[in-house]
Length: 190
Image (cartoon, rainbow, N blue to C red; front, side, top):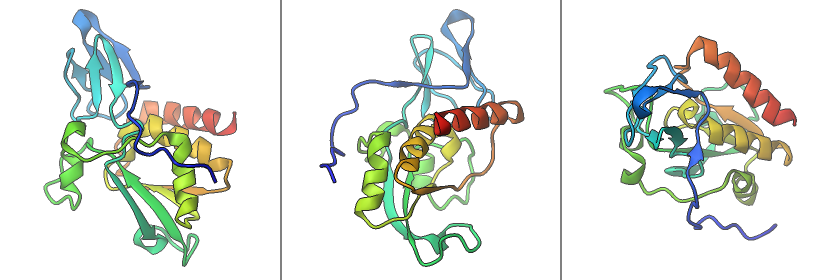
């Protein structure tokens, strides 16, 4: 197994999917039903989809705020790889504002308020394997808001035979959940 470079600095922002430009430098993020209309230099409700110079970027891409090895039984699944370990990860931000959130310290934080470390998507499966995990879980905050990263991790994990789990609130626009699924499928199978 090659050395993992998990402490390298992220070199560039990752352009988001599921958005369109608007007039006056604003962008429209249509990933979730909030349909944020974001002015330049601001973020959407989730805090990690940000408008910079008239383009939408995902600050959570390659920057997990939480990495943990969990028993698979901790996830809301029924008889899925029983007795195995899952490499769990999450970023900052969320597209909901639940007062009872057990992970509020990351889900209601901005990317610069958490201790994240750069982990490129192709290195996530290597970390999972290094720690004896049979699967990867996208959890702790809402994974659809960092969907670009999720898709690229799944694509990388497929080559290693790792299963993936998405613990989600399902708060995604119906029209674009189809686009999400098609994008995910295309990236997984190409």
